[in-house]
Length: 342
Ligand code: KG4
Ligand code: ZN
Image (tube, rainbow, N blue to C red):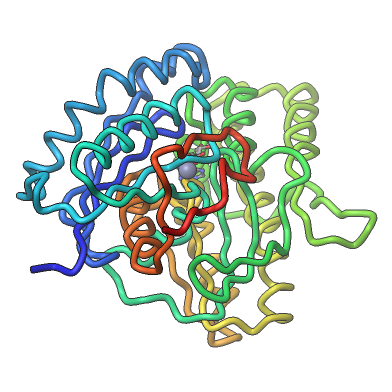
């Protein structure tokens, strides 16, 4: 018998996902219903459309995930759900379903912060992360660097002052007339041209903080397109590569400073942008001189998924951090409520 078997639900944005995770890290099933096709024609996620689709997909997905994991409701020991941050209507669908399950099955409930879960994903189907670690969250809504003393104990070192890294990929793709989401398309285009060295200017904070900024870069790309209109596929690919190189250097430069200052045992990266192979290689190279272990999950655990929610929720429950049935959701990164310990 496993010590814990937690069902996790993720519905913070445009992916409905349900997973079952054993003993905080072994993923028995992780099902994802993507709404990408639905939102693609609008060039971005439409919140109300997302909420309605979650409502439609979630009950089906819960059933399918349990079947795939070969477990029944009676085998479960806990329920975990993303409560923040994200689209409020979308989050509420997941939180309501999780509370319903916890109530009906008399199971403890864990509410999980989405960004914390992106970092925890490094531990799914893998060895425990060694602490102290640096945590780099790079997603569509977040670009943050943390010192992690242990799961649940974080100190923020740097955050973005404007756009998140993934948002920059998406907005630049739109400027270039490419599709949505921009990250994978830009990466593919960038890889289609030989490597060069040119970059746009990197951001610099007047107050010497290590915060990230990507909106100036987006403006620079816009100006470049106006000056030199994109005629051929080659023009697009070269601009995509120059943009991607700048984003990667913007991130690598901050990580370099933090590695030198904190000498962590590991660097953990998570979030959709962590799928980017060139970024993964760049950060692996940054870690080498410091003997810091680079930990990044496989791409299917980098983008939004419920395995990271079930895994982290399971860990929190083992530490006695349990939410009550009055738990709610919050769009804000500061979260819905502090953990309520029974
Ligand atoms: O973590 P995620 O799935 O959702 C959020 O929580 O935001 O991240 C989605 C973001 C999108 O902005 C997408 O363009 C970006 O991750 N992304 C990538 C790549 N794959 C996804 N960015 C760069 N390179 C990629 N290969
Ligand atoms: Zn995410």
